Amino acid sequence: SQTIHQWPATLVQPVGSPLSLECTVEGTSNPNLYWYRQAAGRGLQLLFYSVGIGQISSEVPQNLSASRPQDRQFILSSKKLLLSDSGFYLCAGQVSGANVLTFGAGSRLTVL
Amino acid sequence: GENVEQHPSTLSVQEGDSAVIKCTYSDSASNYFPWYKQELGKRPQLIIDIRSNVGEKKDQRIAVTLNKTAKHFSLHITETQPEDSAVYFCAAKSTGGSYIPTFGRGTSLIVHP
Image (tube, rainbow over all chains, first blue to last red; front, side, top):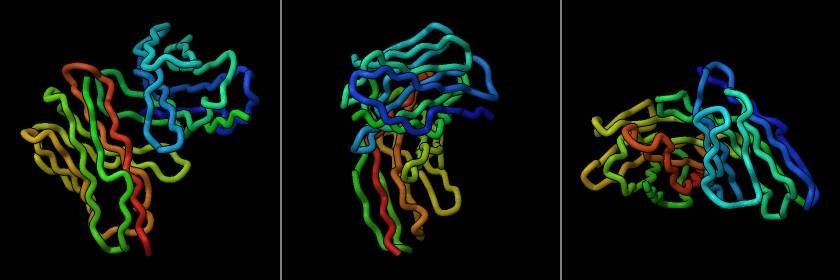
């Protein structure tokens, strides 16, 4: 079964600073990968998804970007953080062709 | 695209009572319906799922029912315990179309001892 690793677990950043959250997958190849954000109100907002290396689809226009430099690596970035970027970021993986999503432990970002 | 509505947003019950969370979906092509449980500060984890060729599925104290005609599905938790307190998410997905599940907004279940 696949395991999703995320880091850092907690991050406090000033407004205008850059961001890099990393997600790696263990136990499967060629997974579909997702970045979700949970702001106050607990809904899961899909930010980006990827079906393969270099293939990124964005669900909502925003201050963030994603990259997939390797099959099992998915990175969420920002050049300049906004206060509204604060939230709980979850990476999820899905074995290609399967249904179940497996989530990472999450990264809690606070922008001050 | 798919749209999933989930109700209620908050549910408060006494320990030992039953809890029911309901979801509706819009895309008749959806045929896979998972439920995830997210404890405070933790990751969502799959607790039960159902496919469209099944009307009901049980796993100990939890059960999920599906009404394809009405396009709604529900999570039932019996004999609730304080450790059932969490946010529960329903989702819908079509295996024939988009592989991306669409989530409901979540239900915060609080079980009072």
